[in-house]
Image 1 (cartoon, helix red, strand yellow):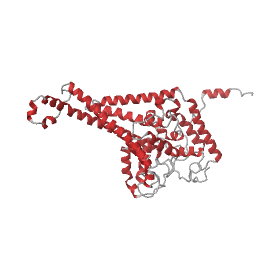
Image 2 (tube, rainbow, N blue to C red):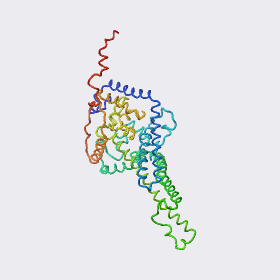
Image 3 (cartoon, rainbow, N blue to C red):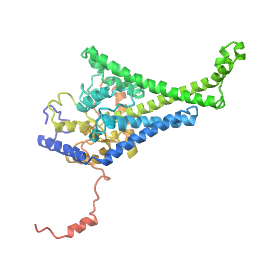
Image 4 (tube, rainbow, N blue to C red):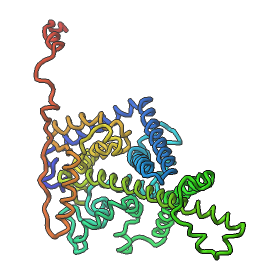
Length: 445
């Protein structure tokens, strides 16, 4: 047991032998799952990718008719859902290497790039390496407040934190861009500890990915809609949508209206205003879909890490940490969100944040299966198993953000060791099969 660990630690009561045994138990769960991976897992991820692409195509097709309010709403909903699936259940988990065991070059962490502003390379470093290795260690895990917020009372207060509720709202709306610059390590740049050459490389990566995303969502697809609507308007000789005005004709002298050019100008007058409206409406739909994805992702990530239940650690406490202690830190440094199977798919199975932090390389669809085993270990070793409803977790997160904007603050009370609820306990009465086995003569061996 790490001698630096505080007496208030939720695993201070464990002996070194117990931690070693617990380490073996957690390793065994991972081994059992990996020995069982196969066709059903392969079918799962391929079906999720297929469904996500069909939703994205449906969204894009519907948005070709984005001048219709119904089509705009349906297309935006499809696109927003597709972006959430791509970001959470597919992109996040593929880039963790959860599906690398398939050796499928199309679904591999080394080749996958996702539909978000962060580069795959930067995300793997800031998230998969820094965050998942040094989870909840103050001063090391940059996800603790993302360098702009104070979310733990042990963090030193500064007047700039007075505005953190506003920072949080901005981060919520622009979460993908916050994640994109996260790996730059602003604190290191401020302390002049990061070489300018590294900063320049980061900026090149961010600007390249940002340019691609902006061109795709705010120029390319709106232009496709504009061209499609313009072509339809031309084919219908201006009868599809009646233009509200004739701005081009009004700019020309009256004599021009009597020439051949007048017919072309008339056609442009009929098409361009409609095409412009299609461009703007599709651009707005893409921005809305990205906003939906950003707000949802922010909620899931924050509820998995900053509810009252989670513990943080100092660097001193984690010095010379054993593998078993690493498992324990992951166990109490994360929190689950309770929900339906559909909720878990849409959250990238990060509703099982505890299981994800224990096994970030395990296929996400297996988290629900191993959760009972993790709970049973927690019950047997008298450890916490952090979980709660979405509304409760979300409420405690934002209460903390508001409270710690001001000086002071104390850690909230923790739930203590996990105890099974009445619903989780096995039936008190023996089954008929058990009674039958009990009536059989004892073995003579």
